[in-house]
Image 1 (tube, rainbow, N blue to C red):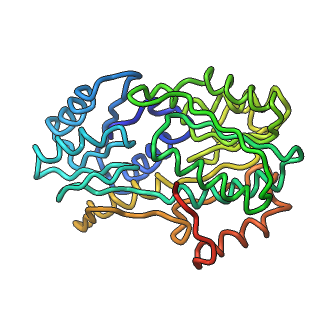
Image 2: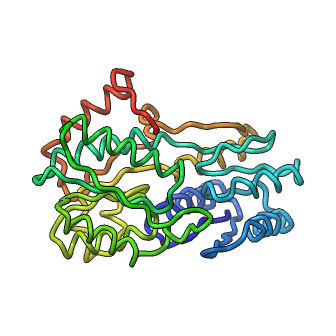
Image 3: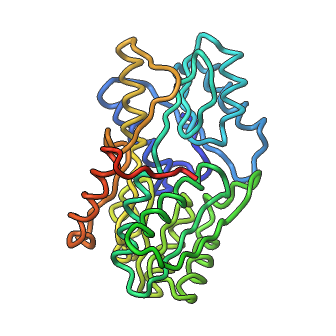
Length: 301
């Protein structure tokens, strides 16, 4: 498995993928190897990382994150007998499986939670890197909040812009961005910023305000000192997608192309750890059902 910036230990995106890999190693007997990414690395480094896994005999090879799009395209074409999976990208190939998520749907639910819990009528969003994928999180969050309160004030900051992907691994930047939002009146801030989210949680703790986690149930994975400030997390079950893919490999039934994990199949959702959303759970589940049955259509833009 080739990880994105932050790698194992990011308490979020990469750790969720690792959880699925570890489960497959334990239950299905796969021999696994980790390959870590570096901040600011060139495209050639990602290509080399994937090719090294192929050369070492690993098949399939899983790339975690859209930053691997071009490198998976190139290395998969060069190695047609090896199966590849990529999380969060739709690059096409006969030997490529795309593990994709309806992030906008899960984000709608935590946006509704933010608006229901906000006392100031002012909420914020911290995106790690300014990309189309992270825009899905922001769009859903904003739509969910506005479904509850059409007049809610909305602040948004991105920590870096491609080709700079450091926004996924810079807690200091996350802290600065969230602190600025709290100072401007926000009382709930949602991050989709990978390892930078730790800084958002610290800012929330210091300001005695709420933060919302992403990808994993971060009230269980974040540093204990900040867990009390996490209202909920937008769960993205990357571990389930990774495990499903590897189970298919084991069974000789590899599904290539887009594999969509949405609310209907519990691919995304929200967490209840800490009990902070217990009083609004009925409302959130009502929104969830309306999205599943198509009454509410959530735009990804």
